[in-house]
Image (cartoon, rainbow, N blue to C red; front, side, top):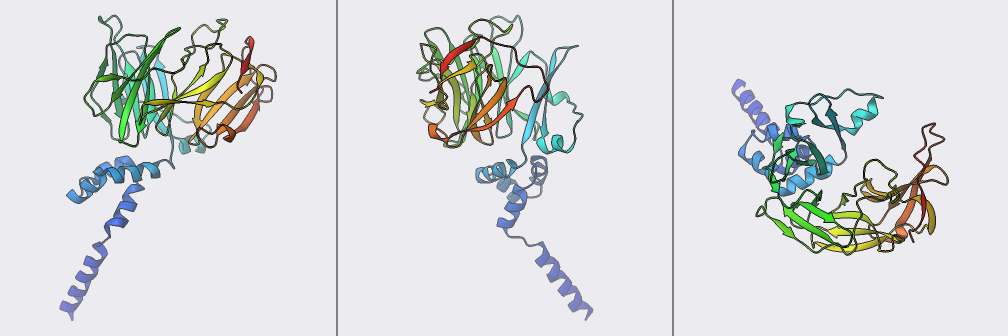
Length: 336
């Protein structure tokens, strides 16, 4: 009887250890990146599973339910920049939160965050006084605490950069561009490619660096573009500076399209303030109104379809009991 009991308990143990690979995949895809990195050491099969591109895509979709904010701040004493990703749910639980950085997230040289995509952060830095001047770019994964090699950019200090992802080739791309009065230049760098910057087609119309024509601001307002689902999007006025449209670069085909903004007609909007942002996986257009002292945000429910623009919300600065934005000269801007 004792022998049978041992065999039975052994069989039960063996049965309890068996899990279908499909179920293991589902469980692992719901874990955070730090846990997955630890579980890579469990077995060769788990390491292979968690390294597979299909699993990475599955985990990315699951992770989108737990969005993070990336917070940057400077330390005045040594001019270093700290960068800390923080879960949104943590901020929502408390009215205030204490955050701290470490050496991994501290930037030594003057630097700025180019952009974020799928949990990766792209940074731009430079060394003051170094000749010839060059920009240094790298991509960081805060979850796994890994950093890519440094990519040099030696084509001038008047370029701006943005960061995005081409899902058709599973390739991350850095877009560098500069604009002048009557010309522009656009370059693309493929991460994991041949480590070279390629020239692509120029902008059909030029995104402007600044919209404050009367120089109301002490510092310029830069138009870096925003990434959404494999596209980079900029606001750009036509040559008459009357009609404003969206210029979109498809990272897959590396070609451009133009979209129209909400049909507002001639609207009292400070020319400095219109901006593009991404909210709830949709392209959004926001602006202030000098006439009504309001912040207004529009959402494009179907990307590229002008009729899908809807006004998401309108917030009065007066109702918020906060200082009204600086009164800027109003221009007749045709958004239609």
